[in-house]
Amino acid sequence: MTSGALARVETELPGLPEALRRVGEVILGDPAEAARSTIIALAERAGSSPATVTRFCRAFGFSGYAELRVALATETGRAAQAGWGAGVGHEIGPDDPLDAAIEVMAAADTRLIQDTAAGLDLDVLTQVADAIVAAPRVLLVGVSTSGIVANMLEGWLRRIGIPGWSAGDAHVALSEAALMKAGDVAIGISHRGRTREVMETLAEASSHGALTVAVTSFARSPLAELADLVLTTASRETTFRLGGLAAVHSQLFVLDAVYVAVAQRTYERTNEAFERTISAVESHRVERSP
Image (cartoon, rainbow, N blue to C red; front, top):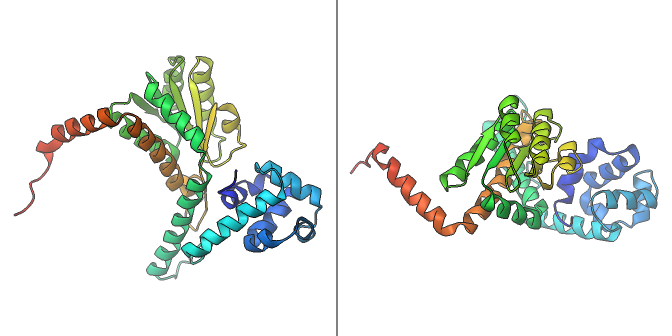
């Protein structure tokens, strides 16, 4: 992983061992300074050792500290150029003007999408899209807000002729998973990757030979470990938007990327499906005023 490092560190920081967590806190506290620091200087600021910093790097997929420094320098430079600093990380108070609150939201969501895009594994995305195009059946499962996101992807896929089903009810999801076969695809969506219903559904689908895909903010979560392929989402909690709610935009972005990749691979069929579905609902549209 050479991009999206800060987003992953921020998301997974609470679950790290204490020594590694201190290193992550120092990096997040001043990423630009961390990018300029030697491994010894960073270790001293974190109250740890160079060996601990090296373990931290490897935990996040870097070969060593030099590679981490390059990633941090790239991200901080990109953030400065894009002007992301304004509003990101600020809290929204009950008495804040609405325009200020909207500015904070816009800055946070822009950074969230950029972090998600930077952290996307394009090889995995390609494998997922290829599998969906070839799949007789695609099952999407999520609970609560993740279930709403799953339902949206189902609609997008079915609009272009891909046989997709979403299931938010545990019994329905497990029943659907039990009927899956080799060549089918089951996609589980969970912010923390610890939702029991989603994990059980993917395990059931896998036991019948289906390819399983996890969409989660936690690359080392139980759901990610269970799945054949993993697509990670960034998550940045802000005032009034915590946990899964904070991850909705990044989940939608990742699934939209999957949809676009599928549509590219079925270009002629997709255009034909658009034409036929637009024609089918045209009589239900109100005519424009002259």
